[in-house]
Length: 112
Length: 366
Image (cartoon, rainbow over all chains, first blue to last red; front, top):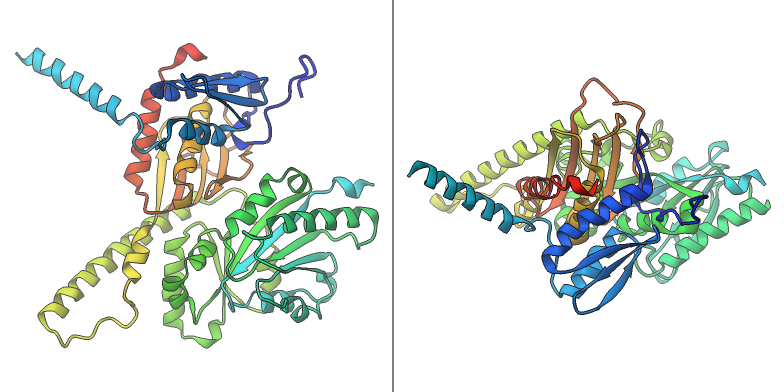
């Protein structure tokens, strides 16, 4: 628990581990994780918020909200709201193809 | 009172039915060496017998019957460990310094490891020392094909002890050794010998994996499998051409397909990883494919710090990560070794690369 603000430490989940070193800060790391997770969940119009450094809240555009203790539970809650799996092996494939098409198009224009 | 804050190492001893778990324990746990050991025995049968077989040992023995601790009575395991600890703290039990947990022959180790790592009460007082899997040298070929539990036990092992080696020949042992390495290149494989049994049972698992050796083993196993598959293909064609040709005796039907699912591969990381990105990707991967990820072991370089991180995972579960002071050798290659069932290296590696491409430019969040 943080002695200054009284917040709890984020639980014992392995993803909360902070590497020792300059600039190490559990709260900052957690907010960075949430920001990155929102770039993933944003593709599906879901949203993630930190809850007092201890839990997460997953929200859907229909107003559904669910608490999650750690990132594993975040993905499970998101899958439940979406009604389909979030598979990292296929995530961002469309974005990669779009980027590839854009580059191909630019090359074609440059050649013409 | 200082005992109340000790952390006690737990060794999980698993292995298929009749592989020789109880015999190994009975042989090791006698004399002064066993006096500081508490033993939890789990049994599946109607009437618990294993604790009677162990009756002659000098250690404290607790029988967990009425079901298997990996599924039916996981809360019993938690209660038994908590009770052992509190009785030890109150002085009702001798101050044992380690616990050996013998599973049923049908248990898969992952849920047991989950109880040890994830339960708040147990996790504060116990630490996983090693998972030791006993493999029956005579029955291994049959059990490998017929029983998925055997595969789960072998793939989760830190150390594999081959029993009944005296009942088989050197060629079969070599074949078994190669197969075990193919399934779990991260494990230490030993053959039972009276002189070294205690060391095999109680030695801690390697904290820092020797990734060079593991990667070489994984590569050798993959090449060996490809060679075997090519040979099997040639044999099949020969058999087709000459109907009287006898199939290879060592390859029962379905064997190649069974092993075909298991792959061990190594992913190398050229640049230090962003820890928040890695945690998101890895939790997503384990959440969706944890059932098929039998084991992950590796060392990672983290952006912003010189200290490498050791990552160990079994199925959905990641052990507490460990920060080392420095790299354990001259080779500073960051890599993860995966043992998977049905997942390919290309799929996992390209998934990570896509994640990095998509999430790394998010400098605005820093």
